[in-house]
Length: 290
Image 1 (cartoon, one colour):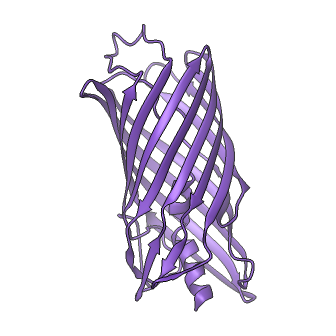
Image 2 (cartoon, helix red, strand yellow):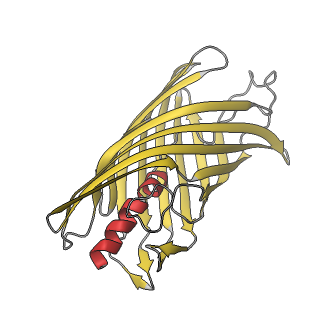
Image 3 (cartoon, helix red, strand yellow):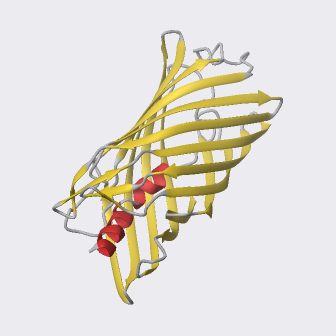
């Protein structure tokens, strides 16, 4: 039963693991107020899920296709630059695992949990209209944000593999961005909190400790419309408790990747991001391209 519970948690939580280890450079950059932006993203991830070596679980592999739509709006709030972004992903996920030598697999297709992000640049980023933005020169920006994970994703408490998490998530975060000539250096620190899933495997209750997340980025602006970034991330924590009993599920994972962004005219941008697991103690050890 313990093996089944841990395996179920890992497969159910895979999309949430992707969220916890997400990498997003220039999240606190200054942009004009009253800006509306909508976009589409496609992510492909493939990788294994690292478990306790004492468990009879092998070859736990998950492949996920995630098309996503998003909308963002910027505004002025108390003399500061604010932004709100809504992201709605749709996922097709397939998982394979051997339990005590027996092959087990499953696929799921449906909406994943949506995310709503509220951000506010507290220092170094005045709320400027588009016409007055041309003369702005960044030095140091300090910002804060809150991400809310909304449990709209597909969830069936009788299934081992689920796309949704059946619980709310909240991540307060603070970020710093500093510019030196064409270089930008950024660091973010946040904490993921999750509510309780009272319908885990029908009759069980799942709780998870907070997950601490850190990001750092080194960005080089080639010209006004193109920039490149080296990205890194680390997550720490997230130990789970099922029916009051802790499992050996503490995450201490490192990721590294890169981003290329280029402007396609005045109103469109193309961004390509790739990152991969460098060291994984528990959870998702995957490669992802967006």
